[in-house]
Image (tube, rainbow, N blue to C red; front, side):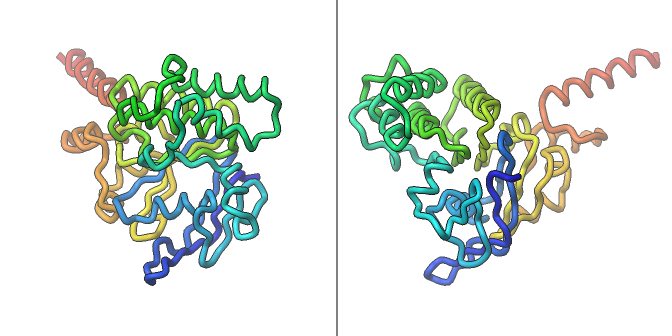
Length: 275
């Protein structure tokens, strides 16, 4: 049974804008998926519907057996943690430790267990040594991990990451990947919104493409990034390595540097053998 389902969901803002229009998708426990598309595609509205910040104008959003229309945003947020695109929209405590600890207050656990949960969240995000600092003493990229740690500590079954790769360097992207893999390994569902197509190709098997409030495709990175018509309709670009492989007329659905190197090496060996 899916942990999260959107069934023919639409949402209209008070000004009459249809942000999403009859979209359907479902996610299993332990699954990771990326939702991609240009600004205005409906991605953020879709995930706000998932965690109860918005209620559907029509259709049904079900989280762990709950219809979001029948529960408060606070109740749904305990099941679906949401890391905002801008960490400054979520930070309000004096220390990083307090920021993460606040997330455990709704949990039905004793003090010792809460302390263990906090320690794990800080360790996963590599923030343990900074725990006594004010969040705003850290650069933007690290503040993002403070909000991730706080959501991890909530123990939500579903975690949504909104543009987690923005402003991150290579080491931080590796940290992010370890976090996502740990969470899915623990049976959590991780849904990521991102414009970083290279990161998507490297780390997400399932990719949902949105445009103009609709779901255009829900498939693998290989299937999606090698459909020129889909790329044009959604106004997104395939990873640079895919574009280069296509320009070279290489067959196969190359989406990562490793695949590019492997195929290119094979081509070189073939030519050497033919001489």
